[in-house]
Length: 416
Image 1: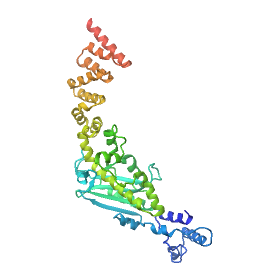
Image 2: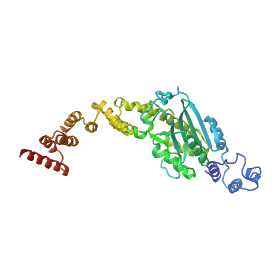
Image 3: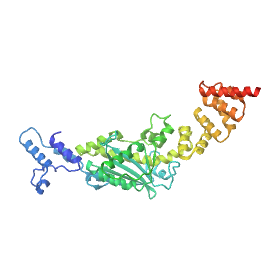
């Protein structure tokens, strides 16, 4: 790329339009000449034009490539959006209930999603496309999508900046929409999307957004399915839970290159695919709440971890809810899950149910079960000899030795 083309690229990235084909900044009808003030870039461009005409070997820009570039107003028309500012395109759509997304329709987005959120909360489903995944001051969110439940339907808004100069206006529009939400939903947004938006606000000297409750579905999905799935990427969740097979999808990792290509060349085809990719991401988020809520009720039926579901319920709804789930899935529990259930029964004084679990696990040499039986027979039954039998099978250590010595002392005292 020659210097002339690079200057055009820099002007486009900064939000300024390069001179129209056939007109240079040296043209007396150009804006810089008309103002009489001049411009350093205009002067450099004029010199480059003169050098190109003086036989220096440099050529003028490829006008065919320039004419194939898609200006922001044309890109907005293609996306069925509107120019919010010269460098920011806004899309605002009310999605019909009958819109199919995998094996579901968007009507399901309005179904209850307890324990993740209450039906009276104002939900916002957010996802960003950025210039990179590493974070830091150089990473920019060039596309932000937000879905809300509006007038009984899913309202999807997206803001796309076509130049670095549009970031401030994009953030202003996004923050105004976020103020309408008191509960945000994302996928890995707690560690990436929201911190990135926070950092970009500060770079733009904007105030921080008001704190809202946040559900990040990456953690629940890992708790439920990490034991069975090859990974917990959103794409895998869509395929296995939503039945969504994306056609002609641009992978998220290619989104930065699509935006940078638009800045450099003005070609918009790949950037339009990024917008469609972002749309699918957000529509998946609107359905995940009700779908995962149904998984929590019957985890084994969905191939999910019962103990993972119980951990989620314990965190979101309390220990009693988790215990009831463990009780209803006793035969699907691992030894660790059975020990957890026995601990809950002991906490409630239900030793008649906890002891058989400990005894079965003690036969397998499970140390926690052996220790629990030693404590039970020492403190509840006051059967020192039986307690000593279990204590004697514990791994050697200070606690085990102290327990054995105490029990032997009690047995000897009783025999006197």
